Image (cartoon, rainbow, N blue to C red; front, side, top):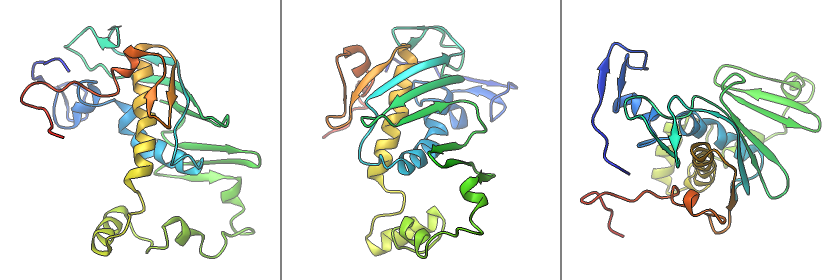
Length: 230
């Protein structure tokens, strides 16, 4: 990535009451992050991927139906270094090989809406609603359902589960393999958003198909003195 100047302007409307290139505000710069697509995407797309049974694969098509950036872009790069540059409004349609679809969007209550043949379930950090939830009293979960989801581990928060996994030398509930897949979807959405066009993805080879420019965004060229040795 090209070098950019350090920036800190106090008194603006960022999360830390500043417009900065560090601390919390690093999320709003493509130079370091992917905006909401990777910030909240990490919390939502992983659950959607798990619920869809797609933890070992990825989408084959990523289409940026609607994307709004706060600055103009050229060839996938922002043209204004003085303002946040990640997408603020977006509707990105991802499609899997079997036809299942996952929409990644900026609106709709900052949560996950699961739509199936027998109803809907909406969940975020504050509420859980839907037909299946309403029917839990008459149709409770089968015995051991939660334990199965938790890989037959204790029903605890992620922090405690992680430390338990370290001690037991076992895989945590939120494992790196499935999360690699869900975060790949988030990053692909960001690439499509930056370029303003649909891209095709080979989830087995993990490469973008017939689009060298888009593929160039999959990995960043490291600047001298910041390289990682294999």
